[in-house]
Length: 128
Image (cartoon, rainbow, N blue to C red; front, side):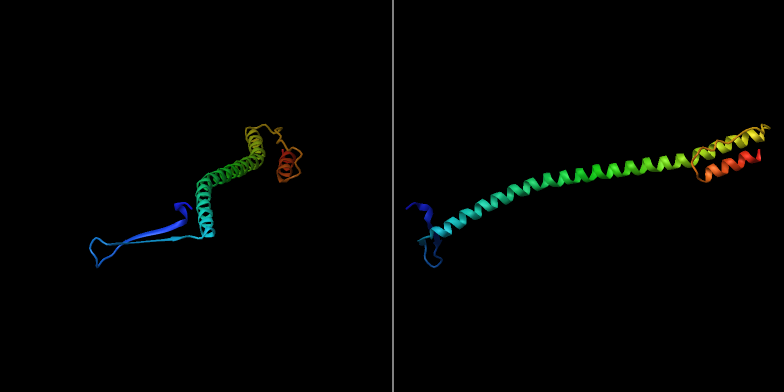
């Protein structure tokens, strides 16, 4: 058989000058197969470790995109809500300024929203 199926060791003997002990022994084929399988497993593990970094970067990128979409949606929602609140108040302020200037026929735009702003605009229009 080949040299791969032997385990060899060379050891210098301490109490004897220039004397070495050489030992060799055949290794069972099953052990060699397990050793080769272990080497293959270690190589596969190293390959997976290398690709795990790519996967982590991809997951982080997806997380950031989702977070950015959520933040953008929240900002859009907040701005839309603020506009719906501020716009009727701004129109009521304009009508109030017109009345203060002497234009008693000024009307506040009430819209058909069915909310408190519509009620406030109608009350203002009844006053003038």
